[in-house]
Image (tube, rainbow over all chains, first blue to last red; front, side, top):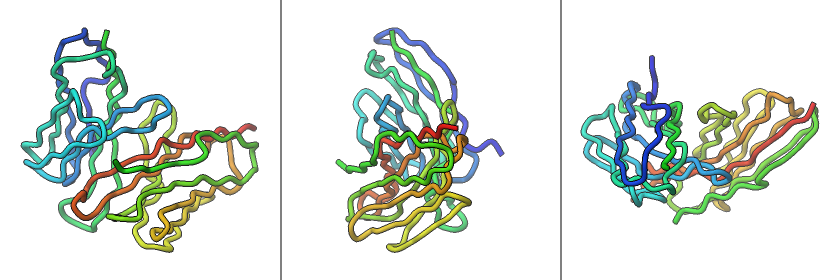
Length: 116
Length: 114
């Protein structure tokens, strides 16, 4: 059981480039999340989704876009990379579609992104 | 903006000491309060998810309490060990019109010295 899988693990982008961070989960979870980790700030919510076709902004959505066309996948798009987007990004999922109601979140291994 | 606040920001204790941290959160639109343990170079892992006012949960030497009416939760570690060194995060799981939203505090960094 793979859980939550993020790719890539590391990436260096030039200012103005675009990229997509991939996230997929095989736990049949309704909810999926994207966070960024900034030093001393814990995890900041970028976007979240409560099901396929539904997405909503978190605390720091500017500069990012998401889509949720399937239950399993929740990609995060950076259109015009800026140095302020240098961070470690974590994808997470929770809330099984079938079974007990449980909002415990399971995290991917993170993507370290540097924008130069 | 949802404010989830944790204190202290960091804590240094000696092996064998007992310690506790605080998480404060909004008392409206509450669905659940989570505690996570986050070791360096790893991903956060859940310790507890609590939903009811007055809930108390325990896992080994770690326990947590919940007060939803006043909007706070405590995490306790009894007899700290060096392997307890980690960042401890709390997270507020919203209900109502923001259902599904999971907002984290900034974390408490615990260092246990041998």
